Length: 272
Image (cartoon, rainbow, N blue to C red; front, side):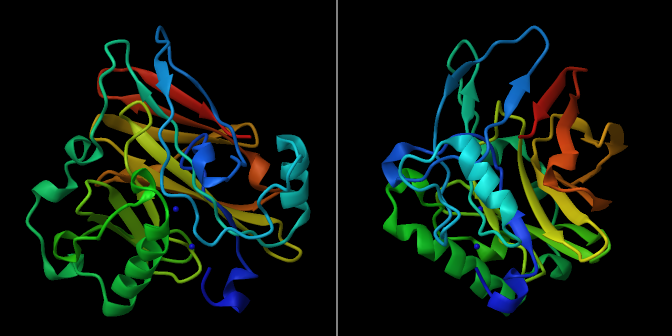
């Protein structure tokens, strides 16, 4: 999963939850642990780290600080620096899912609308470049800009465009055309199905605005999100999904993500 324009970042609270535990070898502690339930399935878990946030600051837990105290510290702040986590899960046969094989967006012919502007290219290059200091398993690699695709446009009240870009190491990165939302780069889907991230900001006198977004494999037919007890439809197209919750009480208002696969299987991921 990112700090640009300090004045803009101070207005935006964001936390990438591209899901579950990052490797201890990079010295980062997972800020959010997510619990998954899939009917009639108990996959064996195999932790694999995604590139951690190279811009992590004082939101990282101090030595000896437990998870709950870290969360309290983070939610007491008005601004956040993003952190990225992933837990890759294998099935009983130990099969691993290669993310590039699970999406269909690159099968269509590329057009001029799929090209990233030079500023967007530079932001993404800078983001992945910051991770070159980490071990190989944490480095997304070089984005292949000539294979970029615009996956969605006019998203939410900010009318965002979202682009997906493969890398030369087989990862997928995606980036919004908005400088206050960080790019994300993912090596593998959780259970071969999806990755998910949250970004939020507090709007004075109007509660919180929370963005839920991520990548979904071509096996995903429908995505919904539970917000303060209500199940909402999530926009899903071209292997990306997006939902904007406005004027909610906080990030914890986003309770769970629910996916329906093409075979009818339901997958639920609970936040916080």
